[in-house]
Length: 352
Image (cartoon, rainbow, N blue to C red; front, side, top):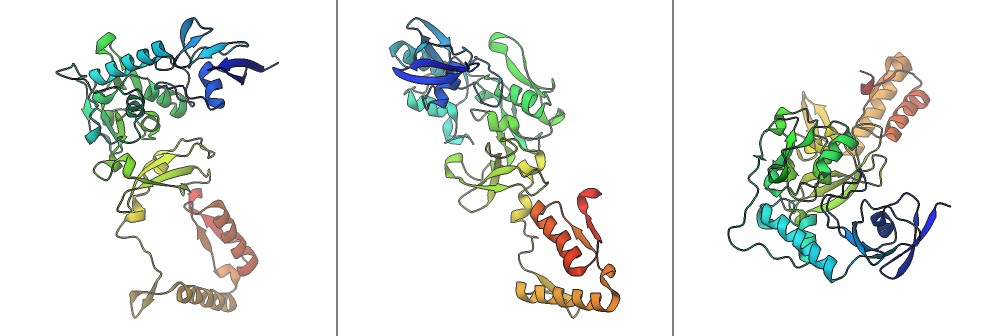
């Protein structure tokens, strides 16, 4: 039998064999805080924020501890709460976590937990991480390792989701730091700018170049759409700032891409707000293009195609379709050419 019964905070819950305590809790809408855990990567157990008490005795990391039948779990008591406060306090003391100028202000998981457990900013001259701040070498990503909490999410996202293995740890103890292919600059590495590491990062250690100076996280408005670049149909959460400009794209976990994006889906949206983008049809009159209405443009195209077909036959017409259209739109194009025009002269840019 795969189902297991256990008790979490006095509530009888059901889980599945092979799940961890944290996964059972999340499936039953029980909130256990965490930082290093992410549902799309393997378990780490590094941050220790998700500590829970098992069978009224030992403290265990719930993200790595297998759930078993009859377990009694306490997720929050005085000792656990103080333990979490201490860990969060040490993370704040070690890094540069000034939320006022951080791009992740409003969506930072460390910030949220510090607010939840009322952890104050360290007073006095506390030691901080003096690590790499790389804001220019990569065209798509920014790196400020002074905000890093060494959770390992970026390392596993790169190795397990993108399977590129650019990120890794170097050094030991207090000297532990991230390295990108053993290069100090991210732009010198084999990074393909998929952005999986940024999307998994719980702080502002990794961020997107497109957001800098264009609005903080809490100011942005999210709208979900479908990527235009290929037929996979990846769902994307697009974020616009107060001026209505697109500044960020995140993969939507409910789409066929399960939250992952390629470099085109991640950054290829700048054409939307380009000053060169056509927003109205253009018709050439007297040797120059002039703006026209859609009705006027469509009537012109229909009449010209009818004239060509009647004078020279349907095979004198061809259509060239685009990968930036949806599969449905491309289907309609070939259907139009075959059923309406009467020719098989249809091609597609992806074949090139």
